[in-house]
Length: 381
Image (cartoon, rainbow, N blue to C red; front, side):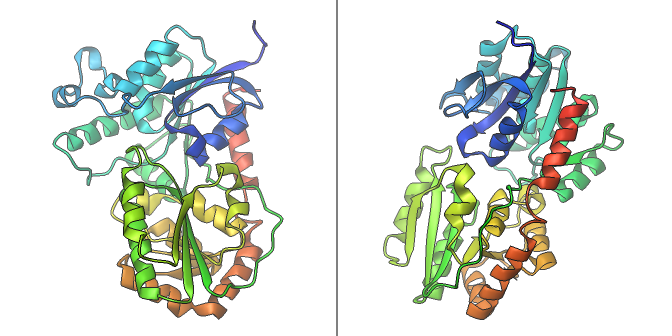
C-alpha cells in the first residue's frame, strides 16, 4: 500500500549498524521518506525494507571483470561485484524517487537501479594509488572513472570533510550543484569534563581493521608503562575477526590494555565520557586517512576528551585549531607515546576544558542544516 511519501533507496557496502555515516543518513531520510537500504548486517531502525548482503557478496569485482576493464556499452566492472549483483537482483524493477549511493563502489548499481531517478552521491573517500593486489590499480582506475563520469550527472554530491570536498572539486571541476560538506558530527551532548584519572585513561573506538594504527596504539602502551591505561572498544571487521584476534594476541601480556566490544554507535559520546585521551594514530599514507575527519574524534569532543593524533591533515587541523590536545610528528609507537607524555596531566586537563568550550561549535547543528538542504533540493519531504 502506498503511503504517499517519497521512496528512497540507500546503498552502502558496509555494516550499517557499525557505520556512523550510514546511521546518520538513514536517521535523516526516514523522517521524510519510505527508505529501503542495502548493505551488510542487520537493518537499522526506520527503513521499510533492508536487503542484507552475505559474507560472499564482496564489494570488489572479480579479477576477470577488472582485468578486462569496461565491458560492452561502457558498463563498469564495479557493476559485476558480488555485492552489486546481489543488490540488483533483489531490487530490480523497484521505483524510486531518489537513490543514495554511499561510496564510489555503489554508484554503478545505484545508477542502474535509479532508472532515471535522482542519484545522490555520498563520496566517502577518493581512490588511493597505494592499494595492493595484482588488479588493485585497475580497480582504482574503475573507481576513478565512475566518479569522474557519474558525479557530474548526480543530483547531489556530499562529502565528509572540507579537504575531501576540495579534492573532489579539483578532480571533477565544474560540478553543479556544488559539493556539500556534511561532517560526521554528533548532537551536542550535555556533559562536563571529568577530572584526569590516575592512571590516565586512553581510549580508541571503531572497527578492527588493518591500517588503522591499532597495533601502534597497543605498542605505545609498552613505552608509556605504569600510570596509563588503554581501552580499545572495537567491533569485528570485514575479515571475520582476524585483525581483532591478532590485536588480542598483541595485547595479551599488557595488563594496562583492555579490548572490549564497541558500544552502540549512537551511544559513542556517552561511552567515551570519563576517558581522558582519545587516540587516533593512523598512518597518513592514504588519501582517506589525510582527508577524513573521523567521527570518533568528533564524538570524543562531545565526550570532553583530550585528543592525541598523528600528522593526518584533517585530524591535525581539528586539534590545532581548537587546542584539543597533541599532534605526534609521526606514527611510530615511541613518538606517539612521547607526545602524550609531553602533554602531561595538566595539558590533558586543559585540553578537556577546551573540548568543552568547542563542543557546541563542533556539534551536528550546522551539518544537519546542510543535510536538510540536500533533501530539500531532492524534494524529499
